[in-house]
Every structure is written in C-alpha cells, then in structure tokens.
Length: 319
Image (tube, rainbow, N blue to C red; front, side):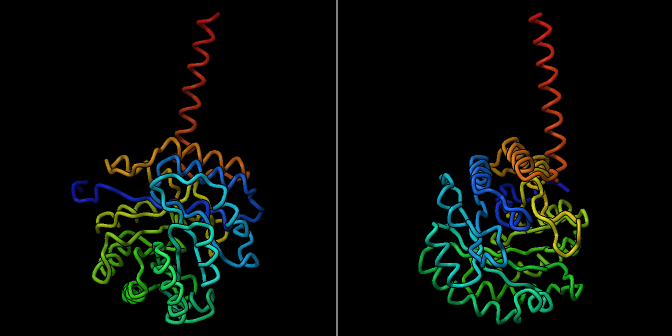
C-alpha cells in the first residue's frame, strides 16, 4: 500500500517511565528515573508519561512520583503526563506540575470487576469529579481503555463494547482516548475493525493505539491502525514493562522498533532514533534487565562494531 494514504505526522507517547517501570520488582533509583525522562525529553518526544499518583501500597515503584516530577528538566513543547485514580491523585499530580492527567477504565466488564472492583459505568462515573477538576485547572485529560482487543477473563471483546466506553470517555471531556491492547492478543484485522467502529464515535485524530507485543503483533497492529487514520501511538523505550497476564511475555512494544518502522515508511515523528536507542541502553543497564528492542540491539551492535573498526584503523595509522 502506498504510504500516501497514511498520516504523515505521528505523535509518539513515550510510556516507559510510567507504564514500563511500574512493573519492575526491584526499586528503581530516583536519579535513574529522572535521567531516563530527561534523555527521552531531549530525544524530542511530544509526550512523556512520567508518573502515577496512585497508592504506594498497590504500585510501590511509583511512590516517588512527586520527587521525579520536581527533579526532571522540563523540555519546551513536551507534555508530561501522570496517571490518576481519583481526586486525591489529581491534586497530587497538579501539585507536581503535570501537564496532562490520565484516567482509565476497561472495555471488558470482567476485567473492570477484577481490577477496579466495579462496573465500567461505575468506574467512569467515579472519574466525573476528577475530569471536572482537571478541566477547571486547565490541564489536558486523557482516557485510557484497557482490554480493547481482548480480555484475559472474558476473551473476545466486541467493538461495540469499546465504542460504548469511548462515548463515556468523550462525555467526560477527554482530549484524547487510548485504545489499549493490554494483553497483546490483537491482530491487524481486529485492530482495523475496532478503530473503524470507534472513529464513528470520537475523532480518529484524537485516538491513540497502545499495543503490547505479547504475541508479536504490535508493529503489524500499528501499521493496521495507521491505515485507519490513527496518528498517535504509545511505546516504551527498550520494551520496558511486562504483561502481567502472560508470565514471561513481553509487554509494551519497544519505542525503538516503532521509530525504525515509522522512519522506514517516511513518516515524521520529530524523535531522534539514536537518542532513544541510547536511552534504552542506559535504562536496561541501569536496572539490569535485557533490552527488548530488536532495532535497538541491532543498531547498537552495528555502531559499536563500526566504532571498533575506526578505532583499530586509527591505531594502526598512528603506529
């Protein structure tokens, strides 16, 4: 297919500092989190999901979110987002200087009841005062819909169920709505069916694709979403973050891999791929975990090999 039919400008939302790191079992030092966000800001992301103002009892990795937000170097033109579950979380996010707050629900009733302990309708109703307060404070409001392409408890999720939640999120006043494949079971045809349905309920240019790579479908799903007009995608540097519903499986699609594909399609992101690869190498080394980006690992190896050859040639010339 000709890329002339694809959106030319793509907004990437980097979710590694929040969605990626929150699943790490061992505490990640504050200084490491801050440097990661600063590296990502400098790489040119328009949006970095930097924090979550949630109960430290449930998400201990995010307990230092206020300190993180206070220590980062704010990059002009970058939106710094924070996940909030309630008014208390919103107040903390506003106090920390978040530019955007993220509220969340699910397209699956079974998932909502298991993870939020209420129905989808109840979960969104709880966010009404949060949305009103966010709007009054002048910050952006983003809604995230989990399990939009499949649920670990109920299995298939009909596109109509996703549309219903999109409509509820739109009624809250969300500026942007994330369609999330939380367990990574989506395939290109399913992705297109969902976005074609949701585009009739909310502007497609204000919807984003959040794909996990559990089944190796994330890049194909992003391309399928591009074909429906989606121009906002979430990704996680070095593929940070696992899938809690499939033990040992990869979670978020790696930002480096997404960038490599988008550049190959001739699409503009404004993000420096090399800087992101270096950030991915930094965080992987810092927390002692494998780098899950295939493009990142391959290009690092190429650069290191080239540098080694250049160094060897220079040494021989000097001799």
